[in-house]
Amino acid sequence: MSRNAIIVLARAPEPGRVKTRLMPALGAEGACRVHEQLLEHTLATVAGTPHTVWLYVAGDESRLHARAGELGLRLRPQHEGGLGERMAAALTEVHEQAFDRVVLVGSDCPVLDIPYLERALDALGHADFVLGPAEDGGYVLLGSALSSAWSRGLLDGVRFGGPHAEADTRGRLGTLGRVARLGQLWDVDEPQDWARARALPFPPAGGVW
View (tube, helix red, strand yellow):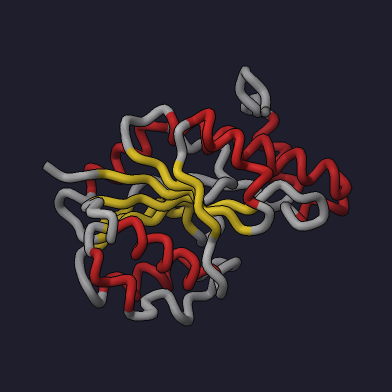
């Protein structure tokens, strides 16, 4: 029987260091509040699954210690390096804990839900990797069933933060195995994205911690 795990890769909520593209419209505190709401949505969603969840934090992880404990999440500091290096390091570590299927998500997607996560884990039953593409050319989810892939600098050279990230990553993964793709979602980077999230409405009932 396979063992499933979910990784959330997130930055600690520190004004001036999160959601910087929202700061011209919302200010540092307002942008941080948006980050907190998106992060809380992500954490509550993953905690609603029956799977083991790891929260890898960049920045002051003490800011998330209490919430991680309340939700039963395993808190870890992110490794140094670029985004690809940090993702690969987290995937490697969790695979090394004898988890066969591992799904990694960020904390920027207001429409991420449990069925989407379960579809990703199910896809890893017949594929080596799975991607959840975003509308802007990036992706909101990366899943792995191939533990040996992540020690090879597999994501070096991927053009993160732009319209080529998902295609670049898919090309790299495809050199090692089969890649499944889920339906397209969207995340919050720009003020218009936040306006779209608020129209859902967002945040869901319950607010933030």
